[in-house]
Image (cartoon, rainbow, N blue to C red; front, side, top):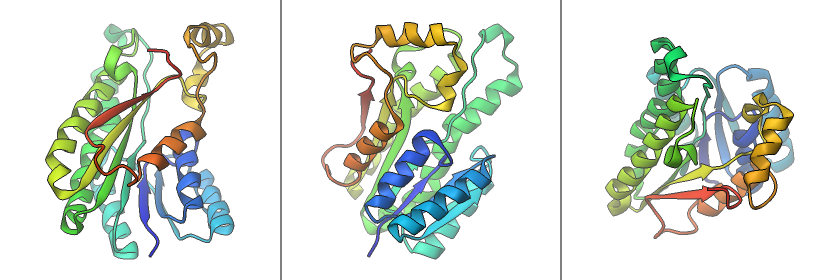
Length: 243
């Protein structure tokens, strides 16, 4: 029987790379995005054609608990189980804390952190019933070190790291692994907001001498999908030796 993975924020970048890697391994997929529905559907069609897996696409806002509830329920109804949950959806905010509105704060917290709670809260009962499952949260090195002008983003990622460690302990008796990947600078659209000189300055600080790629994140996600049952509650840094 094919395994099933749920991936949030899957229309591009890291999420799309994870979808492709798991599809190549035979996973059926439930993918969601908020805005890029056409791009997500095109990705799904390509993966279905290349890897002969079943894919269900959802368009909605992971900050909305009712949307996540519908997505998880329909995935379970259609595929019967969720083997892997990848919480990847996220947004950034770059600017001074004093320039940030309460609406901006609430939005980034709901999208980046509350969505992780929602997806886990709704997917975990079925995993516990089967005594099997893998949860992988995509985090950032800023969750450990903090970043100037990215206070809200850093706070959310720090919350994800603590959430991961705590939930890993909570679910270990049920043989469910919960880990996070703290990414460094990954070559995605989110990081193309920087000017060329700013990007080069960041790269100059990285011992590996380059940004990471979405495919490298996807390979680590694949590695964590059930191959190390004793590895749980960990925040694994993937940053080319940067931090």
